[in-house]
Image 1 (spheres, rainbow, N blue to C red):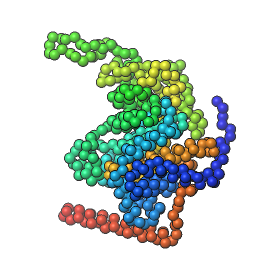
Image 2: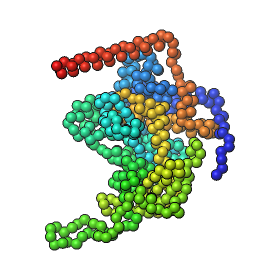
Image 3: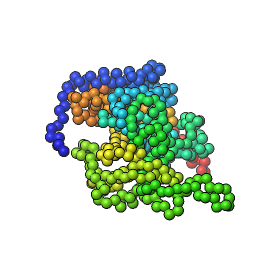
Image 4: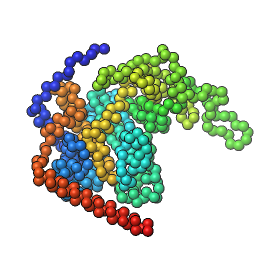
Length: 472
C-alpha cells in the first residue's frame, strides 16, 4: 500500500474565496422561488447565512442579534417564519434531492438511516420525554429525530428528517393540550422509528430522483425484520447492524403444517418439524468460527491512515416470527484495535465479495459525521422553537446549510483537494457580511438582554408565588 508522502497542494487565492459569496447567492436562488412570499425569501436567506456563520450559538434570537441588532420585530418575524411559516418544507427537500443527485449520485449509492437526539429542558417542546438520549449516552429529557442520508464515493449529506413522537404524545388524552400548543397535526399517528425511516424511504423512491442500491442502518432498524423485508421489497440491498442476541439458522430447518389430531380445528400454520436444529445467536456463531474463516479487510482510508478490521461472512436463514425467513448474509466484523464485535445482516446477492461488505461497513458512519458537523457547526441543536412545524422547518434549513458546504468542497476540489467541511465553512465565514460592531451596538444588545432577563424573572416569580398560594 503506497503511503501519501506529500501534503495535497492548496492553490486557492483570496479572490477565489471572495467568489464564494456568488456561490452562496446562486444556492439561495435555487430555493427562493419555493418560498412564495418576499419576506419568507429574505428570512430563509438570513437564516441560512446565520447557520453557516462562525457564531457559536445559533438560536433565532442570537442570530438576529448578530445580523440585525436588538430588533424585536425582526426576532419575532424570524420566530414566526420557523415556527408557523406557511412554506412547504417537503417541496424544499424534493428540490434538495435533485441538487444532491447532480453532485453526489451514483447507481450503487448508499442510503443511510440513523437517529439523532436533542437534549431539552422542560416539558413544553414537541415530543420531549425522558428517554434514551444518544448524544448524552443515558436516559435524559430529549427529543428524538430520525434522519435519512446519502453516501457515495463523491461525498455525503442528509436528505430528510422526522420527529419521533412517543406513544403518550400521540395516544394519551393527558397530552392533548400539549399537542395542541405544539401544533401537532390532528392526523398524526404513532410511528416507530423504523416506520418513520420507511416513510422517508418511500417518499424518496417515489421521486425517482436520487439513484442508489444499498441501505445501511444501525440495529435500531436492523432488528426489525418487517422493515428489512420492506426494504428488500423495493429492490434495495440492506446492510443492517443487528444486536448480538439476534438468532439465525445456519441451515434452513424443515417446516410443515402439523397433521390434524382429530380434536379441534385443523392446523393451518406451518411449524418447525420436531428435532430440527434451533436458531443460534449471531454472537455465538462468531465465537465458534475457526481462525481461517476470518479475513483482514480495508474498510476505508481514514484521516489517520487505513482503517482495518477482520471480517467473516456466511449464508444463513433469517428468523421471521420464529419461522424461517429469507436467505441472507451474516457479516461479522472484529475491530483490530479493541476486538469489538459488530454483526450485520444483508440481502445482497450470493456472489457479493467480502471486500464489498467491508466497504459497506464504513458507509454508515458518514451520517454520524453529518450529525456532528450539524450540531457543532451549523446550529442543528441550537433551536429554541417548541412546535412541530418549527422543528421540521429548522432541520430542513440545517440540511440545506450542510449540503451547501458539501457543494463547496466539490467545487473547490481541484484547488483544495484536502478541504474539509469545517474548513469550507471557515472560508465562507471569512467573506459573509458582518454588521459593524461598536460600543453603541454592544450597549443596545446588553440593554435588550437585560430587559428580556427581567421579563423572564417577573414571569417565573409570578408563577411560583401562585403555586405557593395554592399550597397554603
